[in-house]
Amino acid sequence: MDERRKYERTPTAIRVEMRHPAFGTIVGFAKDISDGGAQVTIENHPAPPVGTVVKVQFKKMIGPINAEPVNMKVVHAQRNTIGLMFQPK
Image 1 (cartoon, rainbow, N blue to C red):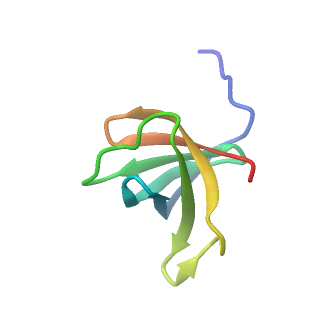
Image 2: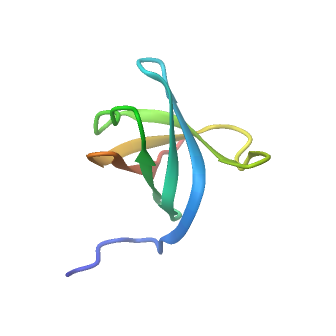
């Protein structure tokens, strides 16, 4: 299979909070992350539609990893797993 990724993925298990005015807050867990984006598993909530830009905050047990939420775009969705791509401000 031909690898098209620009960035190397790093496996992880980080809590992710995605916010959007249309659906509020969705909580998930990043399965992996790279300089280009993250793969996130969502439970108990429908995935946002592909193309949606959400405000994302990555969290650890004792607080946020990024102080300010970052814009990320949903680039693919399959069942309860979505791919998010970092977006410029």
